[in-house]
Image (cartoon, rainbow, N blue to C red; front, side, top):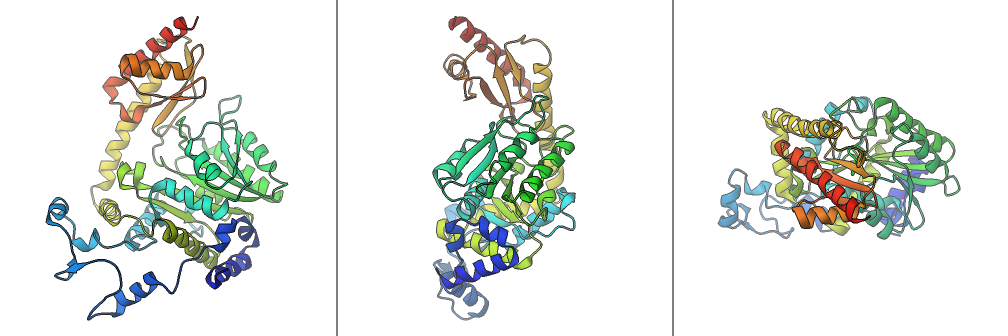
Length: 434
């Protein structure tokens, strides 16, 4: 094992042996090179005032070489802020701005000890880093039965982890904290579990209420006290899009420093929060009372980044930073929030109007981009293909009964036609299947 990896492992084990036990084999072996091209280039950038012949970019006229046909479309930005490589951890100014934003929007983080967000290539990359650092073959990854299908690829196929599902809703159509607790305690024999908490949920658009949030935290604490080391990951992809009386901040704040056997990890990003999906700017943040632990985890994270993508795209980081620093940012974001909230409320009013009879019910939703219909007498995939072939309408079929509808991408005046057409297609499929 590389001495740098050994040194990081010694630090992590000294600060918290439970966190060290959470690391995968790769997580134990990975490190960020201290003596290599990047470190030598960083040193030269600070000291080589005459000539800097280290890193592989081209300079011209004292600035990064570039093509006019590209720069003409980006003339608002200085070449140094878009063409150079970004640091593996991301632009320092962006990391600082995002941390400030996290503290402002998550009051529970006040007084908690957590690291500086590391920039990822959007949220899937952040989740992939978690999988690489903590998931070995056979480890349990606990998710609800209504989940984002990419979890299976990221943790199951890539890392060989075992997906353990529990029902998202209980009999009262609230978050099934008892099911989560049971799934966690079932891992006592393994002594380890990775829990993914995705709120607002994809595909259902559900976020638990404050009491349910406390129940989730209690379930994780109970598992830790029972001897299970828990990597508690908040997948906050749709953070901020809370339309009703639910949690309005990430559970990361309450999970931070919860228990020595709990490592809280926050995955979030500008991707959906700031409506910049193609920019691919995300963040991964760790919580720990130990600065040495936070530093070691960051170094291992940078090792994964260096070994996979080297660093994230610089232009999109600059664009996001510019937005966060703009005096118009909050007002513009609030305007988009109202549009999204009105769409969600319109959908709910349509579904509650009685106009669609008993052909479906819907899973509780109060946030995010999506909602899910539960079809009573029609196969979801058959309905999906009929909508596509006969009406040129796209939806997502999940299993035999569930149809996911992304109201986020439908203008509010068109929502009534959308659901009326889905209703028509469901009726047609029901008749044809008899």
